[in-house]
Image 1 (cartoon, one colour):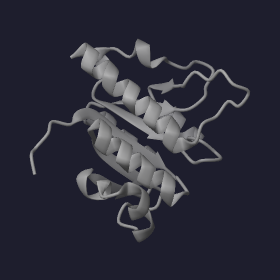
Image 2 (tube, rainbow, N blue to C red):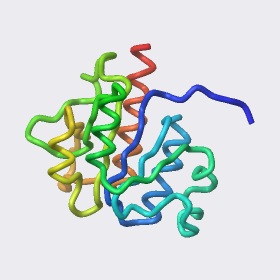
Image 3 (tube, helix red, strand yellow):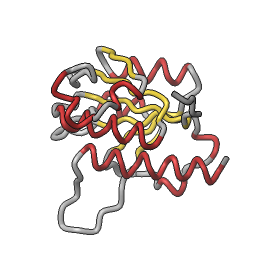
Length: 161
C-alpha cells in the first residue's frame, strides 16, 4: 500500500450516537486525507462491527484514537500546535473562506446529532465554523455537515499551501 501525505486536519467526534454517522465520517476522512480521528465520549468506536457497513474499510485506513472526553483531547491538541474549530452554529461564525495558513494544523470538532457540540468544548475552541444554509431548515446531518466542512477545509489548505 502506498504512503500518502495526509492533510494537517484532525477530526474530533464528540458523543455521536449513530454508527452510520461514524462510518460515514470515517469514509469522508479517508477521501479527504484527514490525518487522524479522535472518537470521544459515547461515540461508537470504529472497531464496532456495525460501523463496517458504512465505513467500507475506512476504519482500517484512517488512524483513530479513543478518549473519554473531547475537552481533554482539545487541550492536548492545542499543546501540539493545533487550532481548534467547532462545527457549530454560533453568534460569531467563521467562514471556511476566511481560514488562513496560520489556522493549520487544525482540529475540527463535530458534536452530537441532537445537542451539537457541548458548551464545554465550544469554550475550548478558537473559533466556530458554520456552513451557510439557505433553506427553511438550519441544520444538516452531522456526517453531511462534516463532509462539507472537511472538503472545504482541505480545499482551503491546498489553496494556501
